[in-house]
Length: 381
Image (cartoon, rainbow, N blue to C red):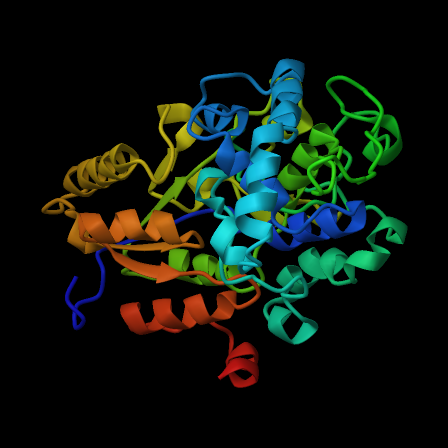
């Protein structure tokens, strides 16, 4: 894509881009539970390519009690735990060296090496009051999260495949509204596993006990929170006339049909008076490719090729000359996902955890339009 020519297509990841990333919350979960930093990502990476997480995102298995049992088992792999301690922790590598999120999902920023890299109040900035209020429930420190009031249940997933996991603060995901921290999973209602780490005969800490169900539902909950910079930018971009073709390419999961997050409740994406945030991909994106629907996931080359094919079809249907990879500018928070996009010829913008406003600025420069409000621009630039 030439540096002087605006992209014909802007292609967005969703989790960690349009909505908040779970990486900070995963770190919080590990800290609170006494789990070594990076173990959760490492364990899921170790289970690839056919771990329960990867299979769920490819739509090969259902999100049910059997999945949650298998996902929990993947977090208790003794071989992976030994490798984690012997090959990584003992070498004291940086988090980015061993917590490769590429095989975990579509939501982790490798730029977040510090546990306190959550967006600050200043980073959350002065976007519209709706965006500010929608993220205000996540502004307290991790140490005080257990005492915070439970946030209003958000319903980001109008389409029930919007499952890019984000945020370890589990919201009420069952109709009874009971607290998972004391009641267990909405699917199995098993008790929370105790958090205790001892030592084994090898000299390494014993494999920590992790409640995979609590972890999973917590990861899902933050996809209910719009990013304070990219989401408002997407709203402004969608209103531009003329504007580029807007697409989304996202690793997703499918919620059970009786789950509250599986039920669409409208055709728009907005924050209601009750504080509930609704997000419907069809209201923003001309083309939407969800991994669980197409049985492929990033960074597989095939899912990128499918996205380009659908974008090409859309453009030709609306009187255009078609879309090639070099016509596309792709925003993602995962290095490996961006690497594949680059290999195909796409332009890329990397979205950094806690610094998503920088991606908005890059997008503005690429498109030659303003996507931040003036107050935020003065605060950030």
